[in-house]
Image (cartoon, rainbow, N blue to C red; front, side, top):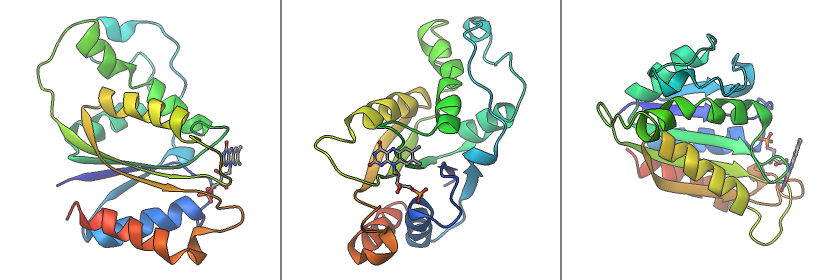
Amino acid sequence: MKTLIFYSSPNKNGNTYKLMNEFIKGLGKEAEILEVFKANIKPCIDCKYCYKLEACSIKDDMTEIYKKINDSDLIVIATPMYFASVPGPLKNLIDRLQVYWSKKYIREDRDDIRIKKGVSIITGGTYWEEMFKPIDETLKLAFGAMDAKIEGELRAINTDENPVEKDEEILKAAYSLGEKFR
Ligand SMILES: Cc1cc2nc3c(=O)[nH]c(=O)nc-3n(C[C@H](O)[C@H](O)[C@H](O)COP(=O)(O)O)c2cc1C
């Protein structure tokens, strides 16, 4: 099973990183980590090139990322919450998934669709009721575009006061979530 992780925090050893690491330990096998903040991913410009072809007119790191997505069996999005949503570089990546959306809904081409599994790991510094609702909706559409069925979700709250390294329970939950996909 090929695992592709979109790691979307600028912090090398922060909350999201630690949960992702526990997840990988639980998974017990190799996973490719794509550092979204380091990738060159320009925003979608709605040029509609992908209405005609299964490709994007913008040539940047997404060219390789599309191939990695197509080849994967398990896709993990590990990200902090920024203003109730995803950080900018991850939003760029998600918008560029329009290539897959256009394939299915504009060109109505359902050939070569490979069903994958999807997992999200999200950390938030604070807590309010239904705080994950907006980001969950965005990720639901992103996983849907990649034909990944969501099979696991981990949410860490209040990381400003309670960093995950001090929270045995959330670290264990991340490990167990990884084990599910061994
Ligand atoms: C630009 C920015 C926006 C943020 N917005 C939110 C937010 O809307 N809700 C929240 O709970 N935390 C918010 N946070 C806090 C982060 O989600 C939190 O600190 C997270 O655990 C950071 O993960 P990391 O250590 O992996 O980078 C924000 C942080 C930054 C830098």
